[in-house]
Structure formats: structure tokens, C-alpha cells
Length: 188
Image (cartoon, rainbow, N blue to C red; front, side, top):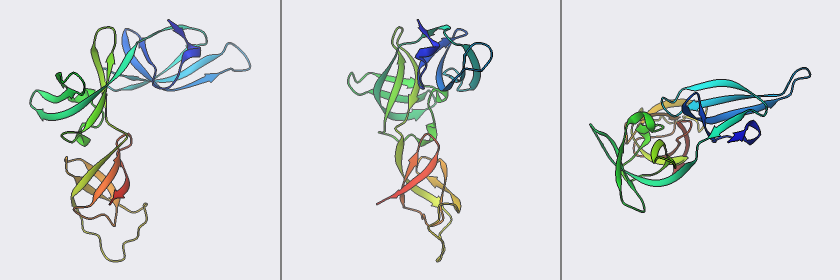
């Protein structure tokens, strides 16, 4: 058991019988009345973000979660298949448990959030940045600026479509931020 004073971003809690992670929280002490905590909670079941207000000092159930290293092997009709890096045990996951599954490349390393008490896999997180090769984009024209404000769509090797600056061409390797799905930089 913990209280609202223990809140931090990324904490997994049991709320209304389901597991949520705290995305954002703010302690509020109004001039009149008791203090409270405003939160944004992300459901691990369906990925929806809800807002909730807790009174200060309320007891909450914290879920113990472990991070485990896995490697993405392949995708088929049964789902996405991964292998644990230390035990070599293989598992398959449904698409909804993976954040940005279209940015997964075969052989890529990921981290699984596993509920420690009953070995239930909660989510699969990609590394913060991935490098991909651009397989299709409209060609850049001479005189296109290096400005990052003018963007065009580009398809990368996994089939995901990312907005990139005008100077990016087919065959370029780019670094993509997996949390925001935005172009970060060109890789030499």
C-alpha cells in the first residue's frame, strides 16, 4: 500500500480493478478545502488515458513491475513474437500491447513490463530512438531548405509513415523518436 505522496510518473497502480500507469500528476493545495492530486492515468488494457482526482493521503495499491529485455523475432497471424535475452524463452504478444508496433524491426531489442506477482506481460516498450531506412518519399528539389518546419511524408522500411524534412531522400537512414513518432535526425 502507498499514498498519493508516493505518486511519480511511470508508477503502476491498481485503480477500479485494472492496472494503470501514471502519465502525469499534479499536487494541488487550494486556499479553501483539502489538498488533492490531479492525475492522468493510462490503461494498460486498452491504452486509453483517463483523468482522475485523488484526495491527498488516499491509500492506493501499487503493482510491482519488472522490466525485462526481449528481442523482436517476427510477426505472423498469431501476433508479434519475442525472445527473452537471458532465458531464450519465446512469447507472442497482441498488437495492442505494443507501443507503435509499425516501428518494430526484426532483431530489434525492446523492454517488456511484466507484473512480478503473476508473470503477466503488461506492455512492450521500444527504445526511445530507432534507426530506419527511407524506402519511399517524394524526391527533394534543388533549393529545398534544411528547415525542419517544411515536412513531407516518408515511408520507412517497416511500412510506417513519418513526416520528414524536404531534404530527406529514398535510401537515407533516419533516426525516429518512438514516443512521438517524429523525425529526429539523419544518420550518416
